[in-house]
Length: 171
Image 1: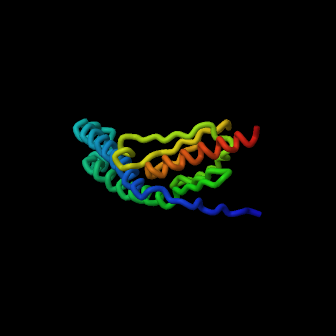
Image 2 (image 1 turned 45 degrees about the vertical axis):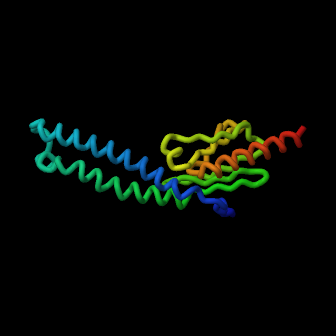
Image 3 (image 1 turned 90 degrees about the vertical axis):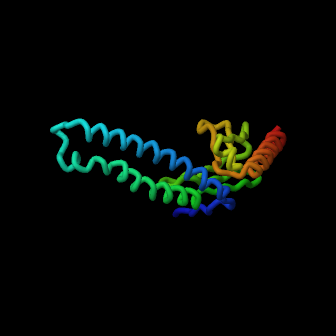
């Protein structure tokens, strides 16, 4: 018998789509540049061991790389946005993330040691933040990426207060 998990109640900020797309575009640019270097290197090498069909078409490599990676970047970004969700109740922080593989995380608030907000330069420019929840478990920390900064700040405060209440109740 299996029990289906319901999706957490809250979506992350739609601006996370822009964040992930920019990350993907940076990756595409790097891979296309590498493909250009490789194609230029092979094209001018005169190596006889390279099959002629590769040697004759090597200049298409950067376009092939861009043509494959660009649609995948858009698919991944929108898929990730559809999957990423979070929820906070009195006893647990529940988050779901991933795009190709999924990760469901349940963090008992009673085990929370610290709650931090982090922002990279692009997150700061987009008004986003990542919430890091560190616990006393061997798994270490969990994170919720792509939150609106105000939501992350409020959530961090609520989790910290609730964790303090639970610790005070236990003593």
